Length: 267
Image (cartoon, rainbow, N blue to C red; front, side):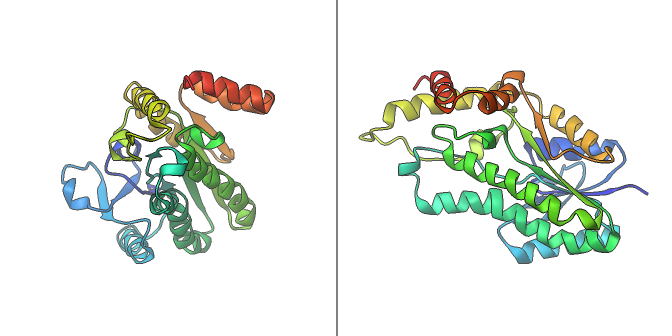
């Protein structure tokens, strides 16, 4: 029987690429969107889901269970970008980002765990970010929300080990998606002390995304995780230097690593 996969944020970018690839591989794929009616050409089923709304989450999972009868794999992919000097980002935007990137996945995990426990099987894949391994200038809120999801996954794994449910993180680097268009950008204020460094860093970040890797690489990585009997705790997917930067953070003195990041961002 085909495994049933639910992908949050499946209408575009990485989620769309993963959904299409898994469909080709014979999986029964359900993606989610806050507005699925906007994507009539989707190559797999899209259901309405807002990760900030527990009622919406329950309704989406009920739809999957009613139609497919089980749920084998959850891919927590829905997320939002955010940039800006932390001092100047409104508190409401910081809270909104954490609600999408951290509390949203936790809500969905809580909703599917009882079902997977009854099945005595399941796999949960949390899409985090290489940015979650380090505090990046003008991306600090994003780094923190994704880093928190990495740690939540580590804790969850130990708590659910007796239920034959696996959980893992897959952290992408920069990929050529529309995330830059959808992220919250704190405005570059004319009289801000951060005007020039933030403006220059923003241009650099957008260049990295537009020249990023093909999302198909993430689809390949996710497929390998699903077909692995015992997934690892962490996976990283992206440019060699982006992945190597995590290794450098482990071995370099803190201030040396900080200087390396500042040189990269020309700060």
